[in-house]
Length: 209
Image (cartoon, rainbow, N blue to C red; front, top):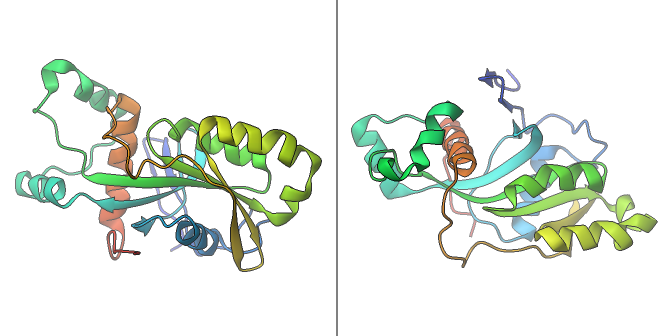
């Protein structure tokens, strides 16, 4: 059965194998896998998901120690945003499940750069992000004058897709060597959603390197 059900009407997971409805040159699954390779992102390319009202594709891997701890205590992913909002309170330090997914990056494929950038920017505060647009978009007048400038401001990488080829047009900000982020209620919720996706994957977070 393609796709999966919604969670609290906020998270919607789709199939990676379906033909892209976004006028991209290949399926979303194929393009995002090629994009992760082009960006040298390790981890599992997960199914497309709608989070924070944006259509994105997470790339992530399990955090072994944290995952093992949660298995020991039977702590499953928590998707209630109201509950997760309390996890960042100072008095809750050490009393909540540890982040068990390492979000390597977030991909946003779309047929126009404005749509893709709108999807990617909210996640650029706490993880590497990249947009994927058709190669034809890069030839438009506003691509050089507006898209690349805005993407650079937010640290979002820009990739173009043509046939079965994905090229990096603009490198983005990398969180690979950055100090650990201070989680917010939003980033912890995103982490739990991605953790659930990893657990549902057939082979969670195999090495891509």
